[in-house]
Structure formats: C-alpha cells, structure tokens
Length: 151
Image 1 (cartoon, rainbow, N blue to C red):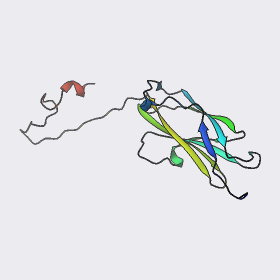
Image 2 (image 1 turned 180 degrees about the vertical axis):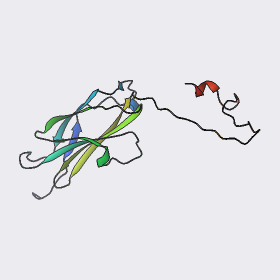
Image 3 (image 1 turned 135 degrees about the horizontal axis):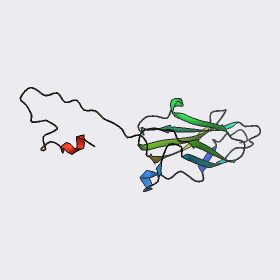
C-alpha cells in the first residue's frame, strides 16, 4: 500500500465572484483576481514539485489548452495564493480553470467564471437584397427596430 499514489487535491479557499451564481461583481482590466489555495495529498513539497496553473478563456465550449494558460506558479507550501491581473478584452463572461499537477502527471482542478466589463464588441452587418425586394430589409419596422442599428 505504500506505493499507492494519490492525486493532489486542490481546494480554492476563496473563489472570485461567479456571475452564474447571481453575483453582480464586474471585473475590469487591471483588476487582480486572487486564488488562495490549500493542497492535500502532497507528502512532502521539498521532494515533490507541484505546480498550479490558471487558464482563462472567453468561450466555455472550448477546451483549456496551453494557449489559454495565463499564470503558473511552483507551490512551496500546502497553502499558497496565485494572483493574476486581468488584461483588456471583450465584455462578457470569462471562464477560468485552476489546475494543480505533480511531475508524475497526477492532477486536480477546479473551475468557475467571472463577468468582465471591457471592450464593447462592434458588429458590422452587410445586407444584400435583390432589386425591388424589401421584405427582409433591416430598416423595416416589421423586421427589427431601426434604433438597434444605431446603438
């Protein structure tokens, strides 16, 4: 039984306010988000290298990859904190994943999301219609309020 290896266990003791749990907190560029953590199932940090990694993505349907990793830290104590300063990006939800891993490949993770207020997305619409056919014209009030095009 002494050769049994257990994966490290990650506990984030205070997560950033999650927008889908009813939080009205808006994060902005320059805000620091902190992830205070506690690790379990680590026999000795002096002999076992353990890393924590933070991934952030704007799309929850895409997998978190090395391209979305924004911060990494080698853990030196069973309690530690990873801080990250938010950059400028588009407004909307940001999805995060905190992962702890050992050199032997054992991992644990936790996920969440925040609501970010940043750059307003600009969408340009090109509408091509046959001559004389105006049934689907976006300026037609039956199709859409024209004021939407101005905001």
